Image 1 (cartoon, rainbow, N blue to C red):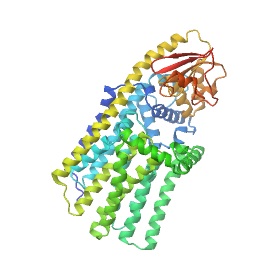
Image 2: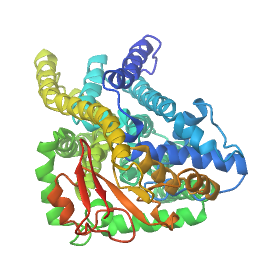
Image 3: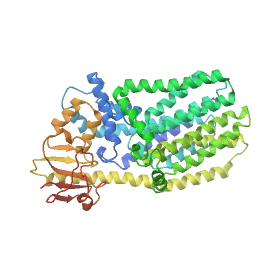
Image 4: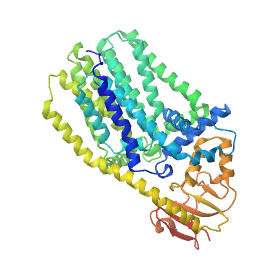
Length: 539
């Protein structure tokens, strides 16, 4: 196999440049407020401020934003977005937080560009690697399938997130997988690179553990095929495990922090042992109810990546095993197809256990490598798909696009509309609360900075940041920081996404969703319906 790419790199660069412009163009067409999108926006700002205060104070503040997924690459990308906005380190001025909030849209746009850049780099790495193995048409088709197989792919770039790294991580996965496939000498360096890549994927998000598992499985398969002897095989397996855990531990203690890493471990353990979102569901490790809910949600969400990954992955594994039995000349094609198949299937199985639409972005990112693996299998068995196969693949992609792209545009248009409606709501809220001396609580997840700032402060986890927020917001509070005030709350602003009707508010056991103390609507309270929110004013 030739690795000379001097004539091929323009294709790779072209794919990357085309994608780089896509999220910013969509954002320009459907602009939305930083506060009117998802939790990832305030989480990213919290991460960025945490590092800015760490650097300024030279103190290892807890980083709550990395105690869940953990999202280490996202943590640093968010800080870079803040640094490019002009705030690389916190100042001693108590007004620093207010200044950042005043310029939050600059941070927002930087984050979108950086997320797009990460995606473009992933596309470039994937295309450079894949074009060693398959024609440019197959590579392009794999990327198109990735983009149109679920609305979540582009949504996770318009709301820069942990899953913005999905294609980059899977491009690294394919690059390492190719090295394993052609590692006839079973070099320790390849094993070390494989383990480090798996650790990087895990440190991005727990569900990306499929990368480490797929690389471990293909590494073992390569040992079975090459038959190096028990001693060498054992050393390589130990090396993989040691490097994986050492990298995770080093990052855990040096970046996440000792206590945060312990919390991360406990969180991941609960997810593994439990079902449903974040392991909080019923029915033990795997809930049949949660699985059926996922099955029902997939077609409604247009998350076709789940079906393609589950079914396509199984086919790749079976075909790869059959190919490997044909002898040494067929080992590379077998290993690549099996590795890609493992990644596809495992990613989908993991998401089925804890299904949510945005998780499918990580599943979709396995499909390009799966396309390459499928091409290699067909080629190894002497089949050439030809024009008819290309036409079929294009038709399937177009059919998916006709379903997923309208769903994507609908979400973007809704966010843009919410932004405009929220501006009018905010003015009305101030009008209705004119003369109100009590505290106003903004409840999860109203599209206003008054709620989001509390989210940022809570996940920023810096005492002087919290104090600056408390002093600068004496008359409003987020439901996430309500414990910081000791005054009476006289009004609540509720999101219609969680309380769609007046009746849902009157019967709710807790209208202050994230507050530690349940709050209910009382007789005599005024309920005012606005465009995106409800306003409840205590009697």
